[in-house]
Amino acid sequence: MLIQAILLGLIAIVANCDYLLGTALIQRPLITGLLTGIVLGDIKKGIILGATLELAFMGAFSIGAALPPDMISGCILGTAFAISTGKGAAVALTLGIPIASLVLIVKNVILIFVLPLIVHKADAYAEKGDCRGVELMQIIGGPVLYVPIAIIVSVSFYLGSPVMKAFLSSIPSFVTTGLTIATGLLPALGFALLARMIINKSVIIFLILGFGLSAYGSIPVTGIAIFGTILAIILVKIENKQKVATATDDGGVSDDF
Image 1 (tube, one colour):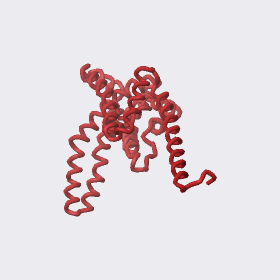
Image 2 (cartoon, one colour; image 1 turned 120 degrees about the vertical axis):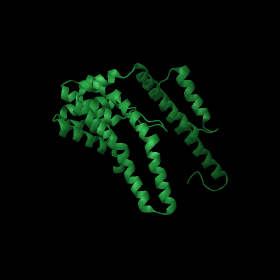
Image 3 (cartoon, one colour; image 1 turned 180 degrees about the vertical axis):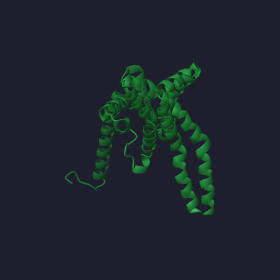
Image 4 (cartoon, one colour; image 1 turned 60 degrees about the vertical axis):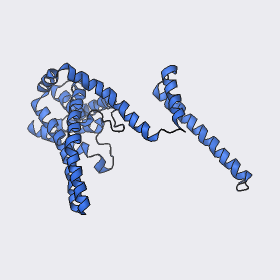
């Protein structure tokens, strides 16, 4: 079991290195579930649980500065506990999502208090023209964030699901309620940060239109996205026709051409 716990921690490190490999999507539950199933000797169940958790974490992506619950640790531990206890997706979801939320707190602490120290150190090396120092800080930055997550995964699996259930149950209700509220607010904050960067006078009307369709037309977001795509295509075609007509009037392009 100790070897399995260590291997699960290594899976967490590899999955967190997704961007290092060119966005290979190895952090998705389908992949981490498969790897977890290989470690625990049940590939089929690992794939099934990975697919189930994929649906649960389908919307878990970073929006602006808002980070979602840590999908990697939640999926690895949820799948591992479900396989080791011989139970199904209910255990994976029951344990995976709360664990992912708790690991997110650890990530935020590291991102706020630890990584900035490394970044400032890299800035100091850059001012001195020390390229090796900057490279060293970049190399250190990854393990500083991912190794603690791997340790949490390994220790949690080694202690077992009963200990983790007892630990999660012992968390005060105001903490879990705060996590739930924060999880709901962070995507809104992320959208607000993105909107601040891209919204201007020429596109604000489309934001208002989408809000109106959602609030008063009861149209789901997917439907609004479809209508928005169609509207964008129509507007682009109209604009292209106007450009062609203007060029023809100026003698630049003929209708035959």
